[in-house]
Image (cartoon, rainbow over all chains, first blue to last red; front, side, top):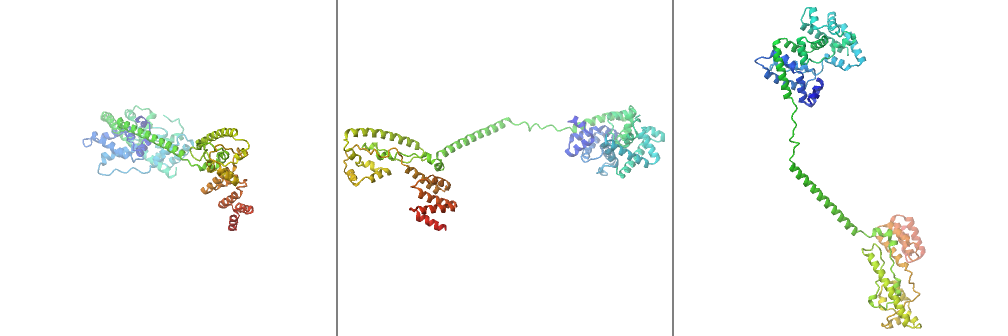
Amino acid sequence: MHLLLNNLNDKELLLRIRKLQDREAAGVLLDRYSHLLVATSLPRLGPEKSAEEAFPALTRQLFTRLQSSYGKVSDTIYEMVQYYFHGGSKSPLPYPPSSPTAIQRLENRVDLAGNNPIEKDTIASRLEEGLNTLQPEERQLVTRFYLEHQSLQELAKAQHTTTDKVRNHLRQIRKKLAAHLMDQHL
Amino acid sequence: MNNQTPRQERILKIFTPVRCMNRDQLLRYQRGQMTAVEKHLVEQHMVDCDLCHHALMGLENPKNHEPYERLSQQLSLFIQREYAPPPKQQKQQIRPPRQVMSRESLLSYFWVIMFIVIGGGSVFLLQQHLKNRPAFPLLPARAAETLVIPPAAQPAAAITAAPPEEKKPAPVIQTHYGNRDSLQRRVAALSAKDSALLKKKTAKDTVRKSVPDSSSRVALKAPQPPVAKDTPKPRVEKLAVNTTPIQQDKEEKAPPKETVEKTEEETPKATPPPVSGEEAMYRVAMQLKQQGDVNGAINQLKKLSGNNRYEERVKYQLAILYRNKGQNGKARRLFKDVVKMDGNLKSQAQAELDNKN
């Protein structure tokens, strides 16, 4: 059973956790992201919150959270880590968004297009139109990263900035583009 | 680089979802051991995934590499142990075999006993039903063929000089369904008839030898012994009525010592009286009428409709039955026939016709 669950993707495992209260599926999903959880939490561990008490508590809270989660698992885990190490008990855990964001909708549509050439052509033409609405430097950055496959380090070097700033810039352009396409009822 | 693909394909990569990095990819990216294509895919994902981005930032410090591997392995084992599937409950599968055996054996005994009781009871009820089967429902269909006409004419001409123990039993109309041992009685009657015939032959021979021919005429008209008179047979009474008073006197004066008598040769020895059978059929019809079986009674009476002796009564009864059945046309016609016949039932038929009108 464990091997079969390992072959399921995140959406299917989340569905099993939500519908069937499948604890084993939750274990598979948490194990899939445990290394990222450790790597993210590692700089924040200290004498107040040691690894022995932080990770069991985090996994318990994550299991509870995943039973009502619809978005990306990585976003849920990151929110939980931020809440556990920074928010604590001072502020309540924010509710997960009930509807997917514009980026998630667009990603789902591209994922579902698969090998359908008509759908892919439609999305691509709309993306071209959306790119034309961006500012020239934004369009250039997107073109270099996604179309010319330049790395973040190369782009940071060219712009004399850090990779984090280039990443954040690209992230904002992506959100802007997705919001524009959603407004166009793509 | 993967720049050979058309622009249309590449532009879709802006929103193509990419999975998070696994354990191997995380370390290889940190160590710079990835190919350009794989590195670009990871970076595409990192633009949108905060978790992977902060995980890489956390591993930028080489001091964290060793605790990362140790803690990630421990956390993986903890999750596998904590979220393992619950062990199967084997207690429910194991049952105490002794209780099960005793329960099953008791159930099997109970059902065997029940089967035997029900089977025996049904057989007993069937036997009782066959024993006490009602006689009449089968009677009308087979009445004509089941009638056994007794040798009523024989005793009239029988020579009753024989001792009293040779008396023949009174002739009774026998049916197959009259009672249970009707067959036995019929066999007994037949055997008695044979024995009477044999004795009669021997008596005839002795009379012919002893009595002269001149007195045979007188002897023929000699009175019958009181034993023969007492028999309730109608034929016998008829014969007695036909005899003249002188003969009756002779009969009375006849000495009881006379032991041999001879019946007339002209008496219908072999012809069975049709009257008794028809009368029985008429009685059966009346019984059916009393029981409410109108159609059976009508069928029975129709069989008698050709007989002149019963014609008036038959038509009258048929008319009543048709009237009860609601067939007034037939009833009226039959009543008129009865009136035309001008018999004993004329007044009653006329009264019925008047009531109809």
